[in-house]
Length: 244
Image 1 (cartoon, helix red, strand yellow):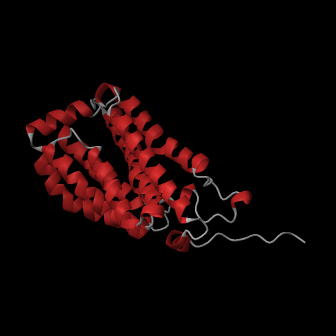
Image 2: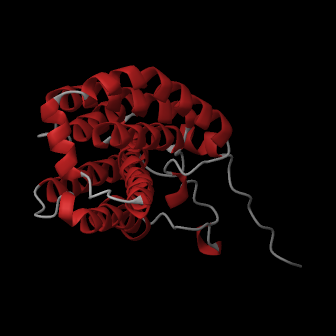
Image 3: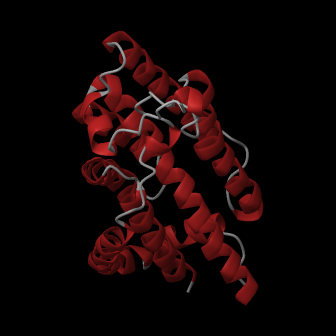
């Protein structure tokens, strides 16, 4: 007689309980997520690679530090498999549960379009500042032809996917397990804001508030998709405005 398989718990129940693990294990996992996230943010902030002529290397660094390494931490250090393998069938959470839920993508896209529409006047106003334009014209890669624009837009989407999962996936859901939801939202917003240090002042200081709002939204939706779509659309619009 074949062995009865145990179906995975509904994702909402898994997030609400984490009942199959001790509070000590949950706290230590959250602490490790915070320390690892802080270290990876520090490395990127102080990296000699940064935009402009090094744009391709900068995108690769983001994929490595914001996506591949955090996934490896979840899989190898947290023991939360990338797939629901047979030997992990009773495990409530795995790597894909850290905000990897795209079932409500239509609603999330509508939210992102609405947020972008609200932000467009602010983006247009900020893009007229000469110092801001100079900063970003040096930060973005050269866009002298259609191929350059296509790569800029595509690489920005890749960058924002990795960036948002790092903050609103790995950090948010990783720290919420042991620290609680509110501390996790606040801590990921602090790291998100700190990562903008050195950017034009309006962007730098508003990033803290933006991190709080995006963190609350992604926790409510149990997905990092809304933040990714919002940030990608706004960043593409921003690139067009400052480079036009």
